[in-house]
Image (cartoon, rainbow, N blue to C red; front, side, top):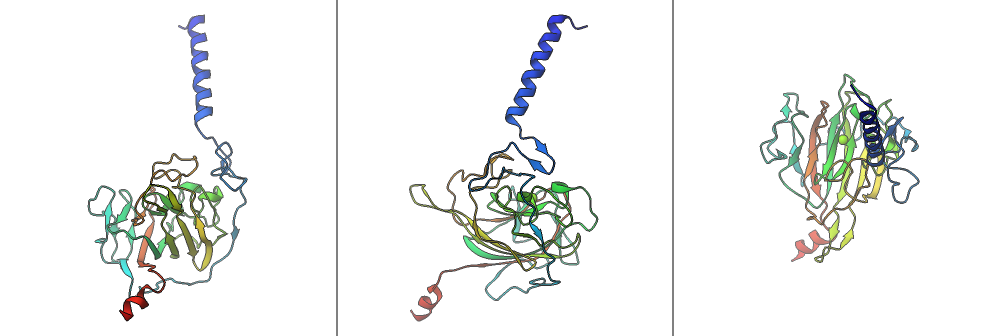
Length: 285
Ligand code: MG
């Protein structure tokens, strides 16, 4: 049985714990959060539920769907095996490869064995045809660079979430210009041009990472800078501002996120961008 002193102690403890929770935890309200940091250069909080929802635009039936790899491409997945991929701990990638030529998320994210600095990436994905969950729990995966910078993969077809976390967002930073999602279960394309961040030999950052993203034929981002690693991955706590935590080599791996939802991927290839005039100079030597 509690005496008055015990009750008072309980109340003080409860109040302190509650205050602590309010001080240190971002609270989700409605679609998103309202007590998270303001994103630099915007009037919006990280994962702000009141940020304007991107305009919905129905994509055409095909754009680069099924696009064969060009002659100079590195084929990362052609439907046969996962030899170009590994798990986070360096073991062989364990995702299921179906006889129909797709791989399915499961047992953690997978990443490429090789690394590249600046490149063009083609990738096809399908969110689960059987819709389960909502918002961030509905068909969540992601295309991530160096395990730090995410382009969100999500089922945002007739499904709202905080705009900086919807499909095609630079997660926690910039919503896509439009919502170009196809229906659950349909194959969709990302054509992404990635440029890595750069640091000088003294560790001073001289360039941000940036991406151009075309989703089902519609531009979501055009050479848009990341202002740091995506929150929630890369050692940056969820709902905090993304930051460049430390220099890293420009050569980065590509990771496909396993967020616990059964996503399918297929037809993945990449072309290093190269440099202007480099090939011509090489050719005339
Ligand atoms: Mg994700």
